[in-house]
Image (cartoon, rainbow, N blue to C red; front, side, top):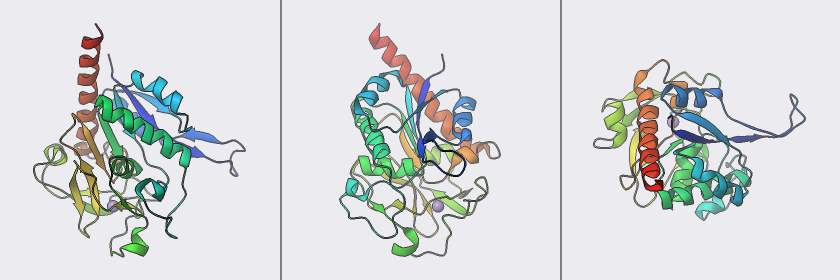
Length: 250
Ligand SMILES: [Mn+2]
């Protein structure tokens, strides 16, 4: 049985292409989960906590995807002028999911916004806008128009799970973010740095699989197999969680 991987989604407001609000994510997230052996299940960011509690027991793993900015009040700050679009219903949904993760130790993988939400949910803070708050020569939005194009190196930190999966050598990564982790949440460590000192991922050794990256491996795994290992390791952890959960249920 494939483990069921819940993926959080973005809300798309009515625009020139559609008069309807929609929920969705890039298809490559789902393809990466399938290639790694999981079964993707999309989760709308409605902000309905009863719905979260009803759906959560169906999940064997949780993938927090990219998206808009977390409300800075979630980490005790006022909105900085450089902060971008906020979706409070999605914030509520993901933070409720992560409260369930804390209780259940469900394997969880964060990507981009997912890296930031994981840090916020566990008590860390964010840089609201890198270019205005921490100017750097690196262009962390450099892959916006071409998501599979690496634009800077990421250096895995020795003795982290990420380094065990990617190897210790610097690895080219794409980058589509303007925020980043600032103060790292208690219980977490930085698992990768960009060369300008930007946090490119965090993880906790206190859970079976609780790991996140700031780049977008879902756009890289098909051309660089090292990135596929992240999805494979995550899905394996989800399968182990499912096996243990079913054993308890019997
Ligand atoms: Mn970056």
